[in-house]
Image (tube, rainbow, N blue to C red; front, side):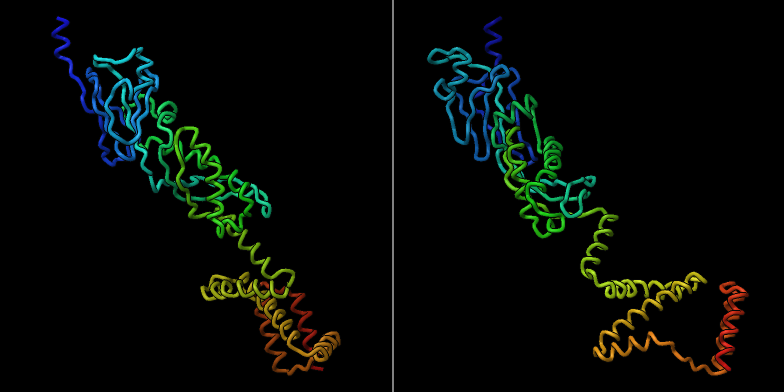
Length: 350
């Protein structure tokens, strides 16, 4: 019976792995009840590593090349199995192949804004994304730390772990780079280098070698971006309030015109439009004063300080009274305000 069992066994003469290009990182050679024949051939192609595991313990590691499996080529396994000099009978051992080619265009990004400290703005919440590439750098460590005894371990299985490491180290990378947030967009390469410096030792802990990482975009949440835009605008005008008023008025006038054109402004819209007109008039007056010569500007300032003598025609008074009557009818002016303004206008006719 024992002889029949021996005859039924299958022996492996060639051990090899042809990758299918499906993102597989680790693949276990199918053993089942088969045993590796003494002197069997092992083929490890470029961008591959083969690892022999004996009873859960990593033994020999093979890089690219063709090998005849003997005690000379399997020194660790020979020691573990207590082979003295040569082994003649077949043996059993798990064989794992690892792909060491570069895995490119792996995406990373911040699903939610992360909070960092910035010397200009204090605490800032930002978003960022980019891509990176990696390869298996230490197959033995990757087997013991990550892939284990699984038949197949793919890039997709590792994706979440690597993304987490990237996000975990972004804050430290920004801090170590010394680049303020406002300069990050213009210094993405420097940011990426700082991020890589943080990630390389973290990746090595699990047998992964980080080949490259890029930062393609850094941005603020929309509500913080609006605040930043306002701060930038204030920084552009500095302490010149005249320019600031001119900027604000120029931004507001199209909105007032749009509201007036739609007919939905009402009394509030008229009042806002009047305010914009007054502000614009003040800005224009300031600009005009700046364009005058020093003597003319001084004379204009002195003239403004003197009481102006108004010359009003009866027709203008009547027109003004009619408009004031309309404002009183709309409820904008009270009866007392209307009477006071009427008396003032009538005095100008005397």
